[in-house]
Length: 203
Image (cartoon, rainbow, N blue to C red; front, side, top):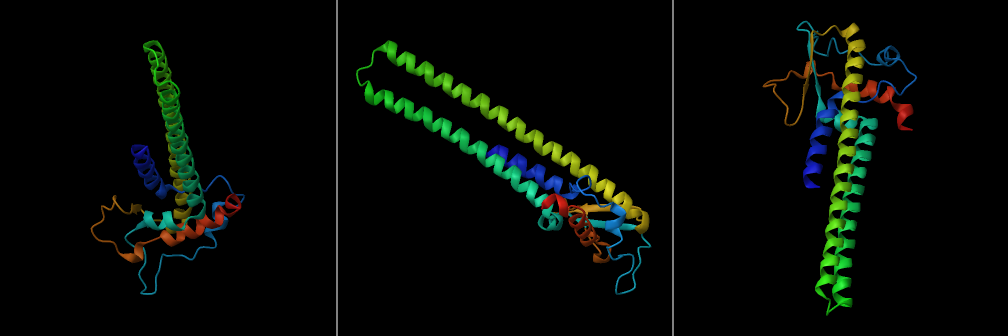
């Protein structure tokens, strides 16, 4: 299950930037954006003449309430799968130990029979493990796709006013920006807007 944990964490980190928030609120994106202060000009008087902005994925991960809720749900599901597999293997081990204690003089036929039962039990556990792992991976993939779509929808509406030519993403492990001008950071806008839009889905 360690490989599963690593895979899910990678998927979740990749999904951070996409924010699964657009379809679950009665508010329109325009209503949300009307409450967000414009970043087109900061206190130094800089405007977005370069038409570029960026979003910090790590910050989104830590501050988007609904995303954190969904991430915890996936993590909890993963723990449940791991616990179930562990308990099943422990049950097989107990079955083997019980046979040894109760049958110190077991015949070859009896030994062969218990070995066959244990082998079948192990095979059943592995099949169940694979099935649950695939289900978890599918849920993670669907979450990633939904988040990607909804962030794009949000930023498309957001950018009608801001008019950036490019909106980049940056974060741990995927930071290709050698230098970042903090005046181009729109992360707070995205966090504020998405948290407001998704408030009904969190409650």
